[in-house]
Figure 1 (cartoon, helix red, strand yellow):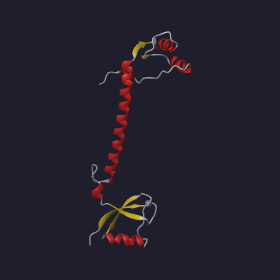
Figure 2: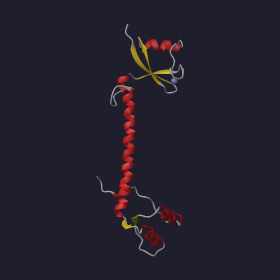
Figure 3: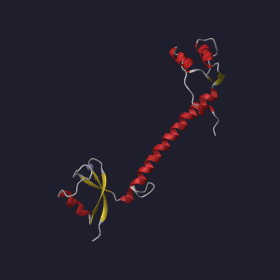
Figure 4: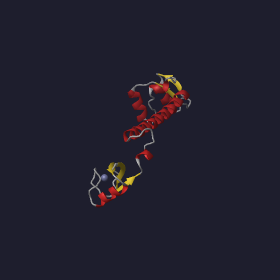
Length: 150
Ligand SMILES: [Zn+2]
């Protein structure tokens, strides 16, 4: 008599396998209390669809499935970072480069002594803090936003 592997899930969501001769066997084992969740001991167990039905993602083992989920999460994160970087690149491309005159120029614009426009440039950390303290919005740009693509 051959044993078949069945996939189970307890009421707490733990997924595990059990080997039984038939579909009836595991039911009687659950009823008699011989078969419980190996993680939490719950007897509230249900069968899940056989492994081939949900092992199709990219491989056949659970390890493959979770690796695939992790990869997709990573890809999504990368896509989001690329989007944010693209937005910063657009800002950097539109802004007038005023170099080391940045702090002075931004202050002049803010105080109405210069034409209002988007500028970028360099300033010291102290300069940036002073600008922010005076309510002048400045933000750091990552170097990558200023480099041409590739
Ligand atoms: Zn459990």
